[in-house]
Amino acid sequence: MQADLRLEALLGTGSMVTGEFDEESDLDLVLLVRPDAFAGTMADRRTFAGGLGGLLACFSGEHVGEPRLLICLYGPPLLHVDFKFVSTDDLSGFVERPLLLWAREPETMQCRLDALQIKPARRDGQWFEDRAWVWMHYSATKIRRGEYFEALAALDFFREAVLGPMLRRHAGERPRGLRRIETSPGAAERLLSTVSTCDSASLVAAWHASIALYLDLRAADPPPYPTAHMPAALRDFLDGTA
Image (cartoon, rainbow, N blue to C red; front, side, top):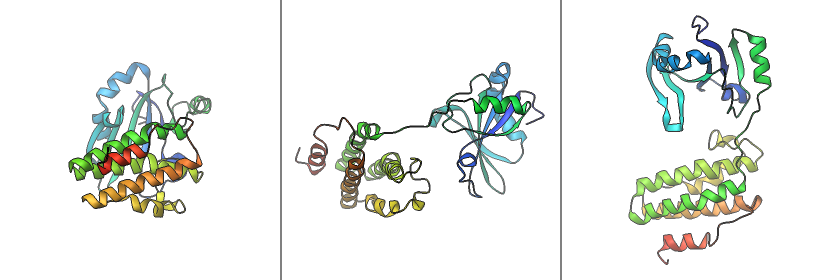
């Protein structure tokens, strides 16, 4: 990277910053690129990644809304590396303060990083309330239609996007889905009833358990504007009474 004059610095993010880095971790790297060279670097990034040696596969991150991201698998031994290419005139959008791994002008770059306004993703009770019933209605329609694998995926998503973060938040932890949820006291046990097998009875039971857990977690931090008619209308919908 130091030999590529288009690059100004290399930053570490993710578990390198949060203190959860271990031998199973991905490498989350941000490459800061000169503004005048950014377009060319983006066009050439697969070649760049391959030039590091041992590249097995890579693809860009449009599926997570980040086209600047290049997701790579190297090896053997196998190693997952995420490269995010960022212009040096656009140091914004960081949800955690990155770690400076290398820079051509380290003191200047560190000062810029220290001055960044970090904006962590904040999800309050209303954020969850605005989404929970829409997502649970979606899963209910799939159960009613007999699309059991789609219903499984929908309940898994609800666990990842709502229940996991709420459990972590109430435990005073970073609300980041199901990552390492097993280390949060009591969280895994509370989630077990929301896990289903691929049949109607199990899906319905897991669906009701998911709503019950959401309501219990919601009670600890009530949203200022709860959704009208919920959960009664949704339960009636799944039971076929409405």
